[in-house]
Length: 382
Image 1 (tube, one colour):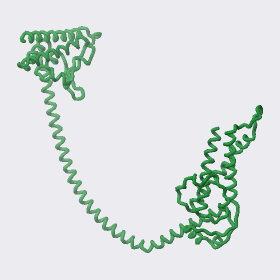
Image 2 (spheres, rainbow, N blue to C red):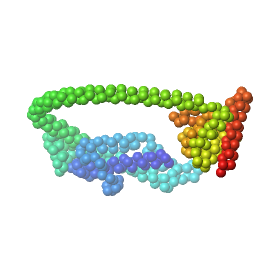
Image 3 (tube, rainbow, N blue to C red):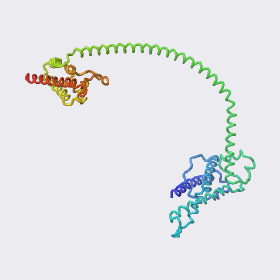
Image 4 (spheres, one colour):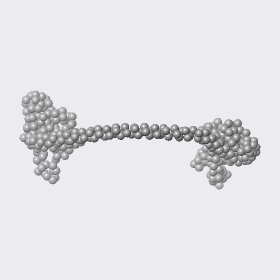
């Protein structure tokens, strides 16, 4: 049934094209006898107006398209297949091959093509008639045709449309030539005026280019000065950063490592907190949690890596003198991750170096013990 739906869709388009042709014939060339003989398939109001301007050329173009599409359908095997099948019967039941509903659709399809085929014959049938049009555009075209065309003649509707389309084209060419001859008078004056304007424009552009070149040279000089200034500032910043890093590394190296170092930094932390014992207890408790987590899960990097910009770390530990230093004294290294200073303690390989791992782990335990001792002292002072 997909073949039938496809054929119905195509005949619907061809029929709509045909109805637009009828409207065009009646609007432009209703003087030809064949126009009144053309059958209608549907009410003209059911077909939307064509968007093209109604002229002999567009009408002839639509006519050719309609003839080609309909003739292709008529010459193709599809219609003959439907016609043959509509007459066939089931060898067992003796009923028609198509059901009642499908048979109605097939017969309507065949009847539509029969009507369109008859319309094509009418369009190609020669009639003798007196050309007489009321359309202003066609009147101008008719005046440009030969005398034998303007008088009584014999012609089919299709040929008549072609004659009018050819006449329209000749008239368009003639009008174009007349317009060109009228424009030729002012063309030389326009050329002279254009030449004068071109010369004035050339001088203006040369002056503008000179000014632009001078401005560009000035900008380039300023740009080079700025580049030199930026490079100098960059070198100064790099030197300052280098000195800062060297001083920072020197300071880190100066921090005593191991148990004694941790004790020294805990003392500095307590002194930094001053009379704010609550802050000192928070710092000591946070350090205790930090190192206890590493002891509990030494394989977890997230416990062994501390970012200096972490808000909680800064609030509890990092803002006090001795807070960061305790990490370094306990064996943490200072590294950069995405330009952020971080502290990390690297776990030695337990499988490859048991002694190094044991020393590292004992150092963590010693640090926890020192922190616990300091926390006990702080409690006694309360």
